Length: 110
Image 1 (cartoon, rainbow, N blue to C red):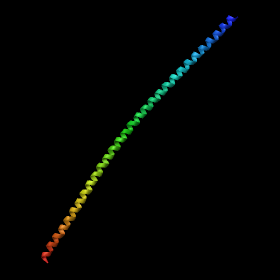
Image 2 (image 1 turned 45 degrees about the vertical axis):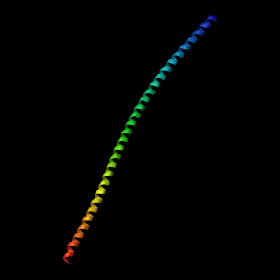
Image 3 (image 1 turned 90 degrees about the horizontal axis):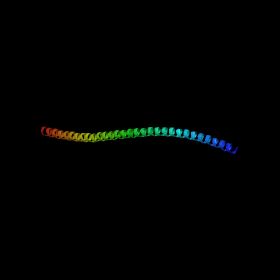
């Protein structure tokens, strides 16, 4: 009877060990699936980060180009304004010279 009880106890323990092993295997499978999903998500996030960096670099490049063009336009405006100022001075000098010439021409006739 004691031998039978020991055998019965041994059978129950083996059954429990088998159940625990099965449960452990299922948990390991779930863990592996979750790990794969995390890896996929991480890869997607890395790709998104890389794409964001590229977009930002492109925008920075466009901004630099726009600033360079604005600078060129400002420089050109300064040149145009300077040329306009010189032209106005030249016109004024010519008008003054013309008045002087007219005054000189009128004086001898009077």
